[in-house]
Length: 236
Image 1 (tube, rainbow, N blue to C red):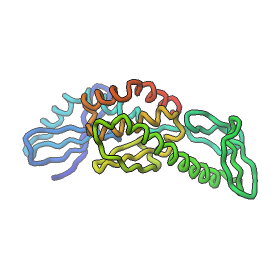
Image 2: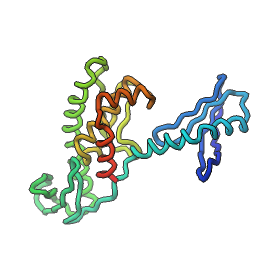
Image 3: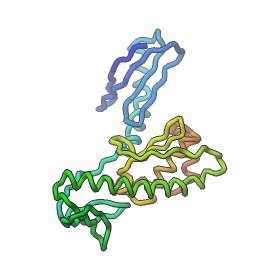
Image 4: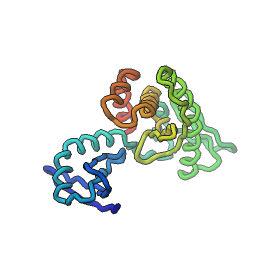
């Protein structure tokens, strides 16, 4: 099999896709969560035939790309100076930096108070990210436990939870039943975090974003669109 990059034009849009040839009878098109398009074609298919098929699916491809794009983290850059606002569980807190002999971070009366031994942006960012990770470990595990209650009848395996920073996704689910959540989600409301967790748990039952997947998500989380919109509003 050989991989090559090709492109078609659809209206004012350019669609780039990664082409692979394989021993098969039909052409397959897949839009990945990062927006990249993968095409697997039969060995004897011509580029003209492939481009024609991709073009016939262009509307669907663009729709899928737009859908996945809405899940991409897009949190604006925050600065580490007094008075700057920082997010935590969907609320904004004004940063208050206090020089001290020990490091400590806490929420108090609408402020995010950082007691610090070193008052420089790099150090403050490192310490705040460590604090976010600690809080994410507490809240994400708690919300995963709550979310799993809705899946009891489906007898899914209890997933392993991994929490780490991700540039392109809020969450993902692996074939080995591992749920990966973006640490940045700790800045979103709990309802939005639970929505992402439920979304990924649905993938343990239906791996693709097909009708059965959305029927299940709608059943287990009827207000998921509201929390998806809140996630986009807060972290955009």
